[in-house]
Image 1 (cartoon, rainbow, N blue to C red):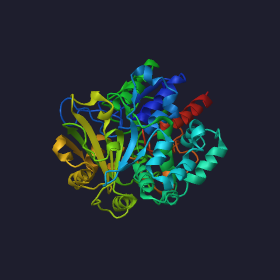
Image 2 (spheres, rainbow, N blue to C red; image 1 turned 90 degrees about the vertical axis):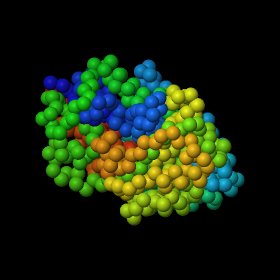
Image 3 (cartoon, rainbow, N blue to C red; image 1 turned 135 degrees about the vertical axis):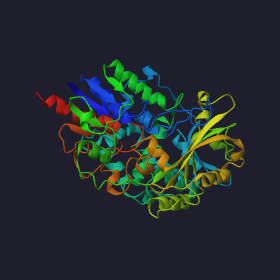
Image 4 (spheres, rainbow, N blue to C red; image 1 turned 180 degrees about the horizontal axis):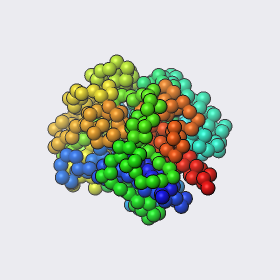
Length: 470
């Protein structure tokens, strides 16, 4: 009998399997797709030689993850590459606010009236970042806080809505950049703890950047899978699990799935019936005949580029997708251009580029024209560079990854209490109604992103159970 079986080979399932194997437990991992990775893959979606990341591409949480940093992933081929700027937010007049590794450079891009406010906001946390991120991403109750005072100070700044945080700034560049950071989790700006979302992304950039993985995000998943095999674990792909009886006997079962999928597989009935899914992504991957022709020079050297004219435009777009049930006319876009630092992604002189906006969960329309009209506002001539495009609306995203229910790439709405208390109100979020079955997906704390911490935290709960058994 195996000690543990893990279902789902996304970053969290892979991390949970590695953490258990590192501690001497026998582990087998089962994945329904033909390759590991979940939302952390790389594929030729458009033309031969153009290597796209179907979901996650830039990894501020990955490089800062306490789980990943404790693993020898560089020995297994993972190489982080840093653009000159982690992120830029251009404006229609050709200027830009930036998120730089330097706090001073970031603050200067906001203008003199807000530079000091930004420095006073982030600088107190940076000396304590490694401890803070471990405490923040290990909650709830998987580990006692190492620095409760700093964590409490962070909570005072981050638990209120991001709109409160934005009121500290007098001018639009700072407000817009912060609003865009919050929108990465597809949450309305006025929600509980959305200020913390913006702060985490900003601090992550200052601490270690927003890198891409050389060769594509698949490199992260492949490094985890290869390390797992070296530890004695086994990986089985093309293996769909529809019920617990499809799996070999084990002392514990760990699922990198949504709560509703787990309930269906394990027969938990309506246990997770109140779990809510949020707004969806509409994503377009591009093969380009050269770099994106951004008007703002800063955007040309940034790995990630946020697109919206101002914070009101971001707020309007999020409200349309999350609350009004319609696609925004001017979507807020998150874009990544790996080619500014990674020449392996496309043939010489060409580039890959992706962009996504927010639409209602399960939306069936086509946002492509709105996406490209928005891009043309900030990069005139963009359409002339397009060689091919691969379009993925909510339905296509859900087919690619079963955890993206209705196109929700966060694996559950990151709004209200569900941003912090996932998948339901509980002090043991990784436990389930069955004592030998655990949940480790992005539907559990600390939530969405390629960081492996949900898998790391769930693995702690599993090995405590296994060691308590005779």
